[in-house]
Amino acid sequence: MNALLQRLEAMFPLRYSVMVLCGFGVLLALFSLVAFRVGWLALLVCAALLAVGVHDLRQTRHAVLRNYPVIGHLRFLLEFIRPELRQYFIESDSEATPFSRAQRLLVYQRAEGEASNRPFGTQLDVGRQGHEWVNHSMAPTRLPTHDFRLWIGGTPGQPSASVQPCSRPYHASVFNISALSFGALSANAIMALNKGARLGGFAHDTGEGSISEHHRLHGGDLIWEIGSGYFGCRHDDGTFSERRFVANACDPQVKMIEIKLSQGAGPGHGGVLPAPKVTAEIAAARGVPLGQDCISPSSHSAFSTPLELMQFVARLRRLSGGKPTGFKLCIGHPWEWFALVKAMLETGITPDFIVVDGAEGGTGAAPLEFSDHVGAPLQEGLLLVHNTLIGVNLRSRISIGAAGKVVSAFDIVRLLALGADWCNAGRGFMMALGCIQSQTCHTGRCPTGVTTQDPMRQRGLVVPDKAERVRNFHRSTLHALKELVQAAGLHHPGELNAHHIVRRLTDTDVRLLSNLVLQVAPGALLGSLSSQHKVFRSYWPLASAHSFQIGAGEVKTA
Image (cartoon, rainbow, N blue to C red; front, top):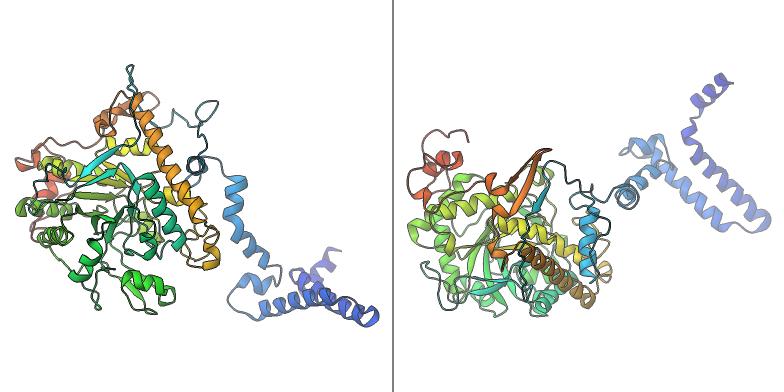
């Protein structure tokens, strides 16, 4: 019997059986039509499947389909829906990446105005290495509001000490929307985010895609991000245009100007928005030709040295009428960051703020190697920026924002304790809009209408409803932040520092973060470096305000 089956398999493999059955179905349906005049539907279905099978045998791209005609498509179907099957039926609440189900659920609950309390104790393993917590006080405070704010660019009565100082400081929330460009996000998503920002009294970063009509519709506060493509302020050849910059920067809705040097998603990598995706709306917002590739170069053309960057900061601050002006970067070569600081010291020009983007951040698609292996994570980047500015006595003149996987009040507390003044969130606010982490952002097939330019898919995102969710998420997160600050016995999140956070190292050893992370004394980098961390001893002497290149001499091992 086995020999017979093997002979049959050799003559006509069983893997073709589904295709053969489709052929029999066609013959049977034809007989039914001739004899009984019924079976049109069966004939169409079987004929279509048979045609698919014939095509599978003739095509050369997929070996699976050539060997398993018709039925081989089941493999691709299961692969297509695998993320959803895993997300809904297999994964635990804490294992998914980049955001766990527990993190996503927290955002959804707060966005919908539901209680985010959890019964029966923590689900976290408090004994695992790396677990962190906030030390609480036996004398907790009671604060009147969760609307925590800070002045960026000095204060109304006291401008910063920078050359050409800011004259229109911004009173910002400690929690704002990170850079999300129109084009990467849909029109409805941009409108909902901006309306939510206006309702909640916080800021919305435009991303490098510039200011679109959708940003302007509801009047929420904007942080205008200017990337290397100078979208919204460019000449036809892609260089910076003063005239077009002034036209946008002087809009009262624009509160701050942010120069994007690099970002967590793909630092050091340019980008291309292909011509078919450059719609009339995107072309108008970015100031680029319709129907042509929209290119973001990997570097700026308006400056080529640290000194020129500082002069560009001062120039934009002047042209904007004195609005807070700064830059965003993901830390890469430490000597390049040190070169920027030396340029601040040499020129007396300081940015009003610096946003540190962590390599774990990123709301858009980027090459895998860049997402996984390029750029410093937020903790290391933030610590280096914060401590360097302390070490040269410039920290009081420059506010620091931090962005990278921020979704909870504890995330904010931790970053403020490490040196940030405020936090930005991109993916957290996308989830507040309804994002389900399908990770199809770059395909145009976003199931919730957040990251697609397909008008039919965008219809699923109803702006008034999602704007309320955005406001609710912001308000509920800051309310939770207030409770953490009160529990620590403090009066404002700005009082947090590294000795408020504890980390477990082993089963029997826990340490305050203040005993684990980099800390530099005020002015310490202006004198001898012999007692400083190796990164300062190795790279600070090699950095120059006149060039991003490393100085003469051998690079010491950090």
